[in-house]
Image 1 (cartoon, helix red, strand yellow):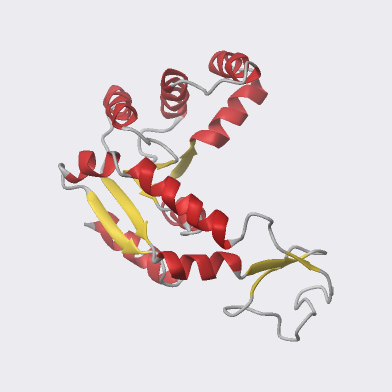
Image 2 (cartoon, one colour):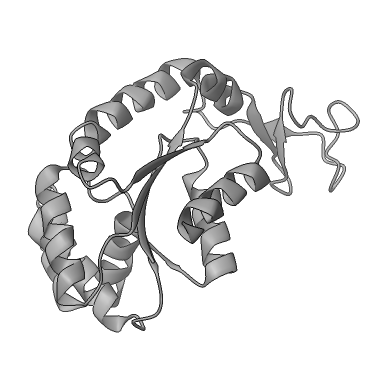
Length: 215
């Protein structure tokens, strides 16, 4: 099973990808992570990418395609892939088709975690964590049992990510829509796009995704 998981930042892609890896033994292929790993390992494609990045340029589609090609070549044929952050353009989608075909694979599903923008803003801007142990909380959905005291370590200092503010979240949503708008019709024409209510609980979203994978 090879799938693309789509959704704006904060929709829960990372959480759901981790669940798919655990439940189904799939492999999450995040282009950002793969790029950093290749550069660190000094692989041929990593060295090419490093040169480009050191010049302050964006890594080309060709380099990203070579990264994915190498990852799929190293994976067992029965291991499914979750593509995260790629493709973002029709050209990349076409390149992915060619790479998958080369390895005797095909794309089975494109699953979008659909979100309500206002609810997503509330979800993200309400997040905070314990400055001492990193335990996660939310203003309304999951506050500490005792206000101002961490449930886990008893710490009294908390922090919020500086980019967890309404302006940034809405800008990310605009960017996501702009990036995904071109590729959705490409896959919808094949009838492989499904949407899941990304505002549901983690368990409900996971069950909905599994139902799609079962067909």
